[in-house]
Length: 121
Image (cartoon, rainbow, N blue to C red; front, side, top):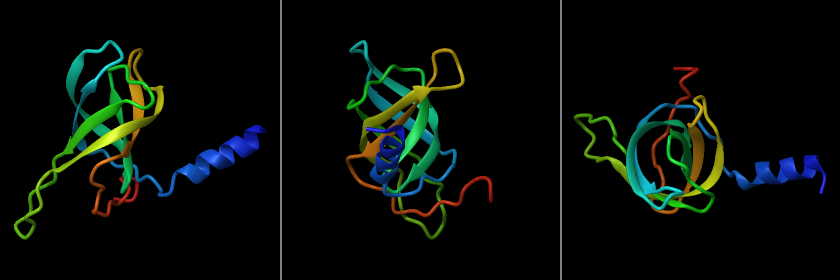
């Protein structure tokens, strides 16, 4: 398979465009070492069906995590925090020596909010 066709297949897998937005997140899971963790971090980008975030924990493809994203409270909005589960589908090096950027596909509820990229806000 050529690198061009592999790139095309990767592009086809992502059904929605990710929006670069930094939202606070609480992530729970089990790291590569088998130890449960809970970490406060923030999203790198989000879409209705997934998100990417920075973590210090070593996660592997296929690992399951729990995600909570606090939603800003508004007078007319009775919506609570967004809580879901996700499956790790991408892992890449982050900024720090041990940091990783992890992409997850939501396997639980999906986002129903619309986000504006931070570069245009």
